[in-house]
Length: 251
Ligand code: SAM
Image (tube, protein in one colour):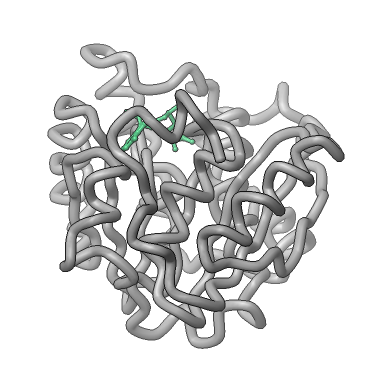
């Protein structure tokens, strides 16, 4: 199926691609939830500038498929993710990748963190419209949340997509992850220079690079990378640094 032939009505027909690329298929209920999520995002976009990705095919590929590609095939890295794991999506925006992840792992608890109040308010309406009981929102800055006792080193998995450069993403994510847990940084392109800055940051934050995976998206063949960072030691208390410092002076 090509992009041009996709319409809002045939999103459910993407089953074959799910199967080929992720060796997984949504249930009928999950299809319906994805469809509803799409409609809610389009509706929300009329008032809020949530996302530029609104065409059905693009939404399917860049929001749904991309969100799940980072985590669904990685069950060997995240043993038992389908069972009562605590997951945090940092800088979730309109709910990606956290909402699709929450929809396919209903037994895991997904915290959707963003610093923008209007996005958090919108996500509240999404969670309630989808009856997604395993999701909750959190308004705040990752730099502050990462220093709060109830959140620091309290998550099995942190996911972060399109928030900042790689060492900033690592500084936001690793303090929130428990020892033995995993941070997943979603990226488009990736370079050798970034590899070096990631290594420097990760070693200071109590992490180690487990895997950098390169792949292309199934419809537009766009380049993607996912960085899987294991949490191997406690993060020194000096991280994350104060609000704005990680972006002004990346590690
Ligand atoms: N992750 C979503 C996605 O991939 O579609 C949204 C990406 S959007 C470009 C970046 C989001 O990160 C914005 O909603 C912004 O409010 C949030 N953000 C940026 N810095 C943040 C911080 N320090 N703490 C929490 N949220 C932050």
